Length: 173
Image 1: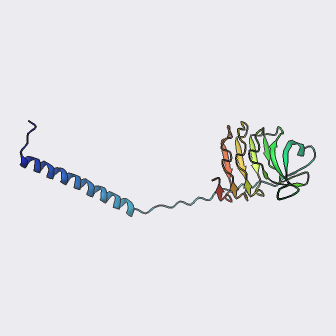
Image 2: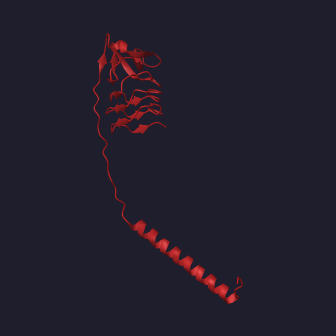
Image 3: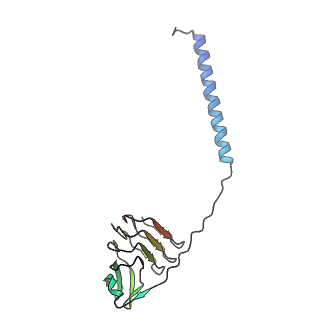
């Protein structure tokens, strides 16, 4: 027991090599067959979400915390936060006649709305939007937005849906 003749050993090795070669050939045939199978291409057309441009003024404008954007576009403003109680808000494109350039990075921290709509007139949505917000559940990105900034919505604690229009061609980095 445990001792085999040279003949038996050579025969066992030959059987083992033939078995391994057979397995390799079967695997090669399977892979060739798999590669020869045509690949089905499925085309998907993303939805278009139309979000109307909104201008606010007076008491309504006081619900928006803004910051002057004097560096390169005098007279334009950034939105920092929404301070109202509405459950659904559309980011305004003009506040008291001033053009809103964009949302500031880390904007909408205190926003109480559960649905936030961003019009397509904002080509770029800043990063870290809604940072640590616990109210926002749905964000709708309007047709026309091309870029969504780095980690945008990453830290929105209650976020369930982000509806992105087909115009978006870049998301974060």
